[in-house]
Length: 317
Ligand SMILES: [Zn+2]
Image 1 (tube, rainbow, N blue to C red):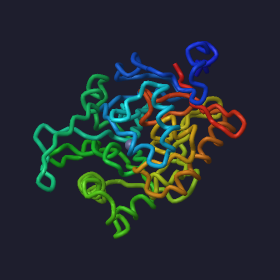
Image 2 (tube, helix red, strand yellow; image 1 turned 180 degrees about the vertical axis):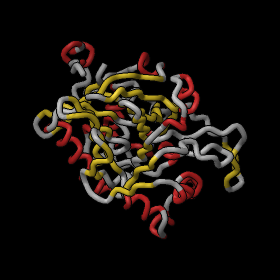
Image 3 (cartoon, helix red, strand yellow; image 1 turned 45 degrees about the vertical axis):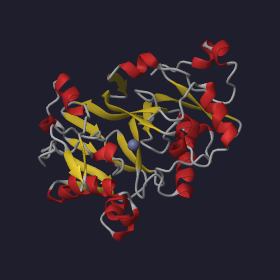
């Protein structure tokens, strides 16, 4: 992967926004829905399952008001409408087809939940079809954590498992948390998604990860990344010459990388979330890895650049 220094090439454009290194607008990136690259021996395809929007008051719950306003203004970000993709990543090598996270899911008919109905509009299935990837050929599914945007695409809305021949990998702590009373304080809709998409996997081939830096298969290593949820994992993908760090939701927005103390309402444990942010940034830096961030501008690829004690996100592309 060739590293491109966006800031060096566009220093004039960014001169007025010294704090944050992300590219102000990524419209061309936002409009594509499939991105392909190679990581070591893997052919990698990143699918845009859905675009969603979040509010700044949920994303940055403790950010100083003026500092946040300045950062949002600098990038022309509407605090009521922060665009965020949901993605899924496919890794292919020989007969191996490894899917990482599964998007929000798709339903023809509205789903009823506590008096409300909603329709799921995830595009992953259609995009896999477009790429001629049969769900039955997926050999492994890695679930980084059990939030709806990562697990909703495992079953069709009639309850049929979509990846019949796969081995499912996830962290033991995540499994135990959601299947115990510890998860009772979680949003009921999140529990509903777990009940429908994770619990039925009991009958399938599930491999629970118990150790940090656990090798799921050759070229894919799970790294403990708890905080966002009780047992989230990040992934090191590739070989020693070329590796990518898949950080899932350890950072929801580039601002979280540059302001490690800015918390989001979606994190389960803020102290652990900050520890994980530091751990992953240092890991990527020491090992010179490119990063993929699930909720950053599609396809979410870039680098965390270190400057003294601070980090700056730079999109690759
Ligand atoms: Zn997410």
